[in-house]
Length: 117
Image (cartoon, rainbow, N blue to C red):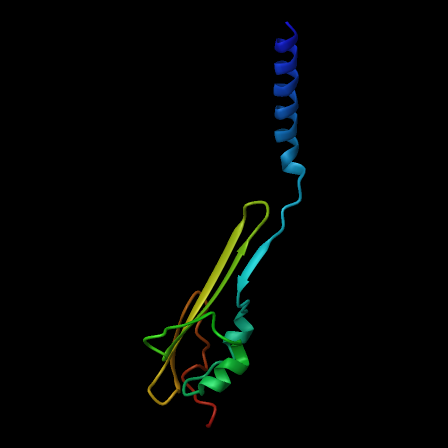
């Protein structure tokens, strides 16, 4: 009978601990470049790689086989299970001038107007 009581207490303790697990603080885990639309709005066609790097920071990934494509990615894994992801791909021509952007952000209305004008 003693082992039955011990097992019942162990089971009750385990169940009560799992019920409390929702009270445990879990941290948010951010990864990548946090970008906002106001940052993307500063981009213009024909910007140099240095200018894009100044506005957006270093890309998360540069393709080793194609250095004309930069990938910006941001992920936030919430401690409570909510996730958030955004990405931006910047493409450059052979001279290192910005050709196009694509991804989860709106292309700026003035994107096709170079800064030189």
